[in-house]
Length: 215
Image (cartoon, rainbow, N blue to C red; front, side, top):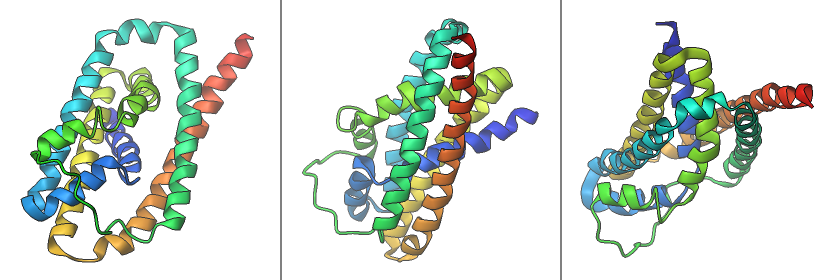
């Protein structure tokens, strides 16, 4: 059961992405006043449904993809570059942003949080698909390569757990009207940015070396 460490890796990587304010976070802020603290887990459920569908599509051809060396190298290098880019972006956001708790304008969508979680993870937020097609796939590929199916399963579980924990926590803070998030957001973001940078550098070194060796 040593593969359980992949649970932590999946959790940290997912939390790093969730901490960056985006359309889904804004949607959640607008829904919490009317749905209460349950808006968080419901929105996370919609988001997880989308990600589960994407993962299912990846699994359809996972064995073949993993057997193609050129694809492995390309995804590893691209994933490394994007991870480092996201880390730098996260650091910039952490330096500028004081709090996520800002007045949110109504999005004009009378949708259930689960439906909104789906919409703001697909058509209204194409970055989700891009993340899974590059960074997510690279991380899943690595989890499978070093820990096989069990490790990959733990990684996916950790990813989903981070989504559920973050969006549930965010709705709880907003619903209770406390300023707790303002003091915790920046150190959490900085820590996750460091983790992103570490994984990005690891991928670049590993797959970049493979490409140079073959060339």
